Figure 1: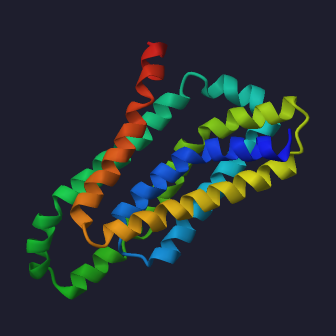
Figure 2: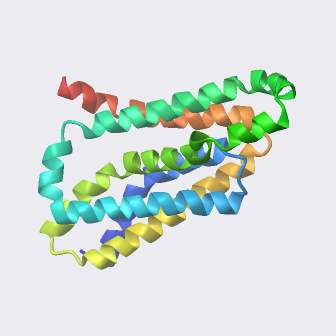
Figure 3: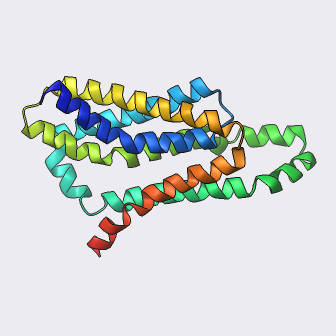
Length: 205
């Protein structure tokens, strides 16, 4: 495959990553914009590239295994994350009235729990997997088309990183002013990605 073909493929693969990155940028305002953009882009680009490479190595077997489950997995991940984001936005008012009754010591204990420390990373990994399942099939395509896999993986990594970081930064321009609304919009975007998988899921029934 030519460089231009690989670039077009990488852009197509990165569209979902861009949408989810926008959602993440709209809903997470606790971390500095550049730092969070790099974090999201790193996770999504690494996972996207890894999935493409796994497809290249084991594509035939992996595609057979996930054929009936890929859409279901994607639907569950995006719908769960979307509902949680919208729920968090709607409950912010309640949380703000309760914060005055929580002592600083208790707040520190809550912040230091395992879930609060790693929930963002787990969510990013889950979203990264959900947006990268298509890369498995593309990786298999690379293996049967005598593609320069190193060049393909580098292009996928760079394009995904650029799309993801741009999505976060663009969303941050809006989210700093309208936090509650942007949480709802971000959750809705993820729900729309989940709904997109319903035709494929219903086709399996």
